[in-house]
Image (cartoon, rainbow, N blue to C red; front, side, top):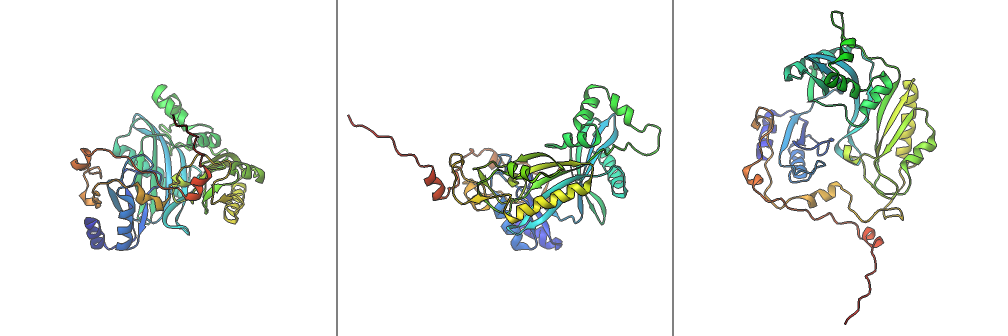
Length: 375
């Protein structure tokens, strides 16, 4: 932590972003406006098991990039590239119940052409060339800032979750189809679409509009209603599919990151105005309490006792070992990651005590002891 503080104070350009080097889904990401925030972030990250099942041993400290975040989905064949989808994130920095969190609200598929889209495509093609990606799909995330596009991450894979399906529903071709073509079919489809010898680049068709909407819960407790049924009863025209992350009876957490979202909605329609109107109605239902009805105690549909993950339980997830110090960016190797300390490699993995459930929750599941007989 001393190195992190020294680097931050020397740089003196707040806010900074602190996050674990090996986690996922925006887990453990903190905005730090001062040294006190940085120390608090370090205490909440190091020594905590993350959603991938591994322990956070290191912390990355980065500049905060102000701007809009985009996703560019591409497919490549023999060093040539096609853009097959461009998305824009809607994220919120902090929510009332978790002011230091980054909460994703939605991804929206954009038309293939526009001033921003053209800049993103040109930039991503340079990135793919620089990292040597010549064949296959790629999923690149970029921040568009006052300095221009800045790379967040580049991933040689498909768009996650329902992304390939949405791309197919809205453009006519799934990203999985593009990937299979360049890997298995010698790029037959790729060659049909690539603008060889023609000006410009391939522009995917926009047959429909779509948004991948994240359900954000402002409340927590045992879910007393079905999220899917509540949304179905709203009869919103653009909802294609409802994918709740929490079923009736299970514990619903306040949304702080992707692992704690209440679910995902796929909204597809010819009209973006209709999609926006449906989103507004859903957000209203989230905020007025009609979408998430929760109980502080288990209900008859609740599963066997378990303990919901929450910030208060993070301290109970720590390993009984010395903490690994966080690393400022310049302390890292050429790939930005420092190998684990030898002391941690040789250390025996230990199990964690599960966080303690509320007594009321445990009492609801108590089973009378079976009678015993003495011989």
